[in-house]
Image (tube, rainbow, N blue to C red; front, side, top):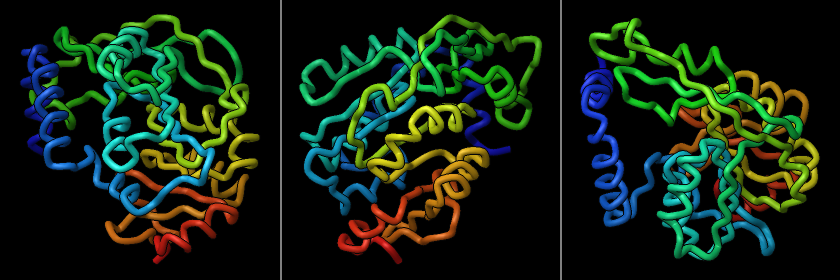
Length: 258
C-alpha cells in the first residue's frame, strides 16, 4: 500500500494536521519556488497574450493560485470555489493580492443551485474531494486509498452551492486549470463559447469525458508535459493539457511543442 494511504489514515484521526501540513507546504514551496504539481512548471516558459487572464476552477486551498503566482506574480486570476468556507479562507489568505478575484461558487452547464457533496471520514473533512457528482465524491475513499479503511466511518455531507456557465462572464482566458472531481464535462460545456473564442491552454486532472469533449467535439490536441516540452497525443501521469490550433502557434513560438 502506498505511503499516502497511511498519511490519509493518520490525518483522518488528527484533523489539525491538515492545516499545519498545508501551511508548512505552502511556505516550503514558496521558499523553493516549486509548484505543488510539476505540470505547473510549464508556466515558467509560457506567458499569456496581452489581455488574457488565468482561470482556476476548483481553487480549494489556493494551491494552483500559488503555483501561478510563482511565475506570473501580477497576472489577473479568476478563482472559483463552491465551498463557501474555503472561498472565504482564500479571500483571507490572498487578501493582499489585488489581481485575484475569488468567486464563492462553482461553474457548470447552466445557472442553478446544486448540491455539493463532501466526504468526511472519522470526522475529517476531505474538502479537496468535494464534488457536485455524488458518486464521484463517495467512491474515492476506500481500502485502497486509506490504510485500515472502515466504511462505517465514512459519511457524505451536502450543502447547496451556486454554479453557472463560464460563458456568462465573457472573460478572455489564456490558461484554465480545472479540478472538479468528475464534473469537468459540465464545466467545459458551460464554457464552450469561451473555449472556441479564446482557445486557452487547458490543464485538467485526467478525465475521459473531458478528453472526449475537448479532442472529439472541439477537435483540440491533448498533450503531456514532460518537464521540458509538451508531447502531443499523450496523456499526462496526473494532468493532461489541451490546446486548439489557434493556441498552438503561441506554444510553438515559446518552443514548448516537442
